[in-house]
Length: 330
Image 1 (cartoon, rainbow, N blue to C red):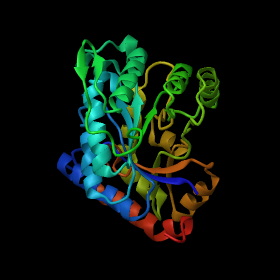
Image 2: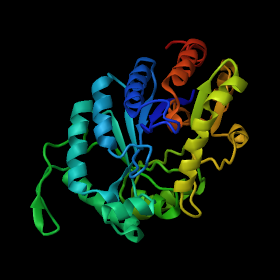
Image 3: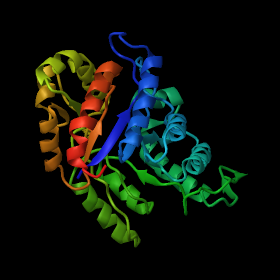
Image 4: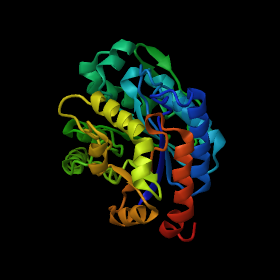
């Protein structure tokens, strides 16, 4: 049985059909819905400077979701660490770890959009090295003991609720990222399913004498919409999903690829993409049965600012006619 994941980027619709306030309200309600329906993760990402309001403050959003839910684990995927002060991020994650009783997981990534680094006044060419040094600082900060950082004494208190520190993973999608995660003695959540990444990780882990690490390779569709009439539904949701796919694809730098990325010029391109699944309840059940162990069915109900009414129709049909077949005991 694949994981069930609810993702929100809190983006405004391209046609102004919903206000940003309506999108925020619907996203929070859908996280609560996911909590009540046994979903395995809620996902929030980070990007900056988008006209449609892509979530720039994932830790703040996660705190709100934690307060609105009871059991749903939250995955911050990813926090772009080089854009931030590692001491401040460590403090925020410690507090969030206590508020959530350990149910917030954070993927720490290097980032890749030049515009975001320019906006933060950070050198993009050193982002990998900066990510590694910032994580080392955070791991030291999580001990709760005073230490020297950039010529001053710092101390992060309180210690986290989770021992030895709040759950963190290292992101990335290339060999250097895999080796970095192993050197840091942390698990890795790559941005793509490249089968070589776990091999690089294992090789570096062996070199540094690290045991017990793992790589969580993504698999499964990253946009799901359940409907009794796929043809009619595509006519309603197509422009929003296409906007989502095209803006995300434009963000990727040369030679880079990630699991959700779809190169689509038209809605027909979307229909052919394995990441996009718009189908009947039977279609969803069939696809779920083909997903490898550790894979996920990822819902992004408001993708591209998709109208909440259409999103709710999909989720309610999933709950009524798909979820009972996937998890009869739910």
